[in-house]
Length: 482
Image (cartoon, rainbow, N blue to C red):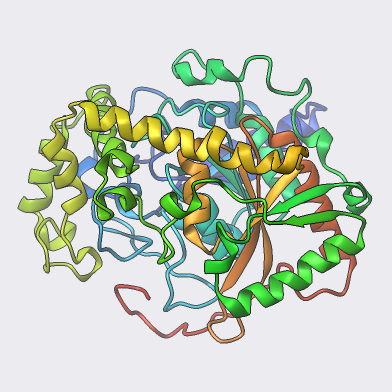
């Protein structure tokens, strides 16, 4: 999206520090990108990919960028994304924004690169930077990670500050990390997590995070001996692509051969109500006639209120509300697709914004019922229940993140997920992953066992691990992507 014009001078200053004997940590002098909805107070823009925010000035660095600068990392630039982090439209081209154009997947140019943190994922798979930051409300870290054959860590809501991040829903928004390895993604997480007075949700982590950070839990394949993983087959796996499942089963057999136990049937009690067999659908409750059971019922209200609060802090802009954004998109329909059918990347125009606008931010009975329902059925009567299968303490759940509703449930819970590269589809050339799910603030456990599985993959002859991009369809320029 945009390069930092000061990156070289910053890197030279950090090199001088190192030569003088000062090393801030493992990220000293290491370049990184952040998604273009994460604020940086420098010569770059923060626009969520929209022309509407070009020229606006943020009041300060986002907390996560500030922490990375302190750690000695070099902000190389802003990564492209699905505009407004997929909030603006319900029928759109994943990875497209008015300002950034269409982000392409290096494994298959015709297929969507995952989103909404599209550029963050692609930047790692194409070796542009060792790590990057993205954000997730529902799938926007894990989806681009698995579709780009890299590691993604989506933290518990409240582990990483959202201060200075263009918001959607404070119930589900979180800042996550991308890397080619679990170690790279974990080093980035160690730099950014912690309590921040500008984000009250981060107070929830007190007493629940390890002294000394998460890198200390990185391990090898020997840690798999005695581990117990749950396989929620009916909840997620039965709906996943059969050919992909066959390959993933070979990887699971390899994990068992290293001494782990995998228990099938560790189901989420309400999976028949909360998992759409057809794929990702954050308005699944409404589509069944129950808006008070729909994630979208509260996310669209949250967005209306949260975006107004964010815009209020900006300087040098007339965009102060969702109403202003909607009108800008109409006035600039050619570039921003504010009307249906004008821009092929935004086939439905801005119907997501219009749905949010219609709520006027009112937290009515449907809002509170939907929030309570989604959190209950994804938390204590969801992932937590599956982790306590038949009274056992399951280490983590294993899920196929390419079946997006699996990640959707973890998003509603606000619980952490780590995804690992697991193979390539022979026909589409597209990667897919294997995800580890845990309860709130269980990042240490997930990182430990993700790194153990990764070591097992790399030390064996299995083909079910990360491989380099294939650049299939590199001459194609289709919009929307498939």
